Amino acid sequence: MASSDKVAERLAEIRGGAPGRSPDVRVLAAYAGHTGRQLATLGFAVGVDFDQMLKGTKYAPQTGQSPFAFQRGNSFEAMLRKDGYAPTLSLLQSEMRFSPEEGRVVNLRVGFPRNPSGMDQRATATRELLGAILKGKRDAANLIDGAVLQTMIGGLRANFEADAIAARIGASLHAGEVKSFPVVDGRADADKLAGALDQVAFYLVLLRGLIEEMGGDPLRASSEAMLITPMNVGLKPTLSKQDVGRRMDRANRLLSRIPRAADVAATVTSGTSFKDVADTKLPEAQRVETLQSIAEQASTEYRPDCLGSCGNALFCRSRAFDSKAPVLLGNQAVRLLPSVDSLSRAAELADGARPTPAERPVAKQLARAAKLYQLTRGSA
Picture 1 (cartoon, rainbow, N blue to C red):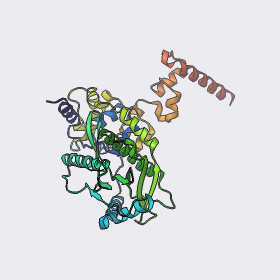
Picture 2: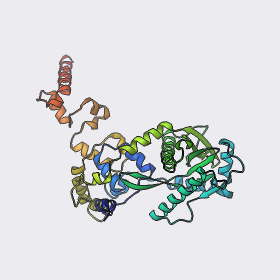
Picture 3: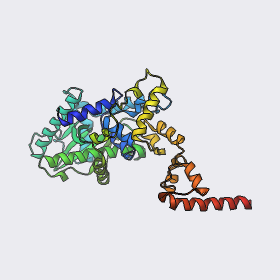
Picture 4: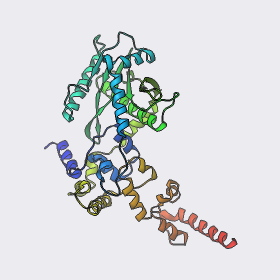
């Protein structure tokens, strides 16, 4: 069996039938804040959907897109494709100097199987379409809807679907994203806007890599992102532009930090699996106990910001409470108590317990703080 097949088999063994998800841009963005957490890294490497894994337990996260928001998004995207993409092309002509005769659109969302094989086929089609653009063929596409770009994630090939890629405007290529959140009086929700721009930045990183691989100049892919959103509360589209060069740098750094899936899998013992954790037919106590045993191998490191980006956050917070971790007082406490693994240990050091070499600097400060506290109480 080929090495990649063995790795895939081992990852499937650890996932064990738990809800899975592919590493799309949203998954990467969520993982970016947890690269130091080994349980998060294990779940990311084997493709477990932590947002669904603890469903039916007290640790299940409250996640999921509103059905109204989902319907609004579908309606907005359908409107942009009406009449041969007339609304989209009109925006590009008015905002991006897109010539009226430039309207050759290819939709890769249709005509392919809706499975991994279909994504691979779309990636091949994207490469062929881009090749025609780079060669300057007169009949080359000006806009590719649903392009699929590939890269290696943790040593395994992964596909990423973009809303709009290779929007050829003159000699430059652009990437864009369609979002249904509104822009009101020129302003959008800051978090949603940042997430959308991060997505486009990642697509541009992949696009530049593909262009370079094909022998072209990667800088033909502009760092100026296009974002198409509704204006105000209706569905009238508007296009905004923003340079995402710095976000592209961050995306490159994230990709370089992702560990190899095979190395991550090697950190847990044979037989380790998320299967029982995700089995909603099992008693909650058994499911949580299984996750605890995995966490003992992989370790957890809770931070308050985990609550908004990781489906395991409530579980890891419970472990932090059990161990009296300094993070329970906030991130600043973690910075002020380096090398101190619990609040109980901090109290011992404040009372004069013998510190380890690593604890000595903070032990001195804790002892001084305890003394000042006692003096304050005595003078009250």
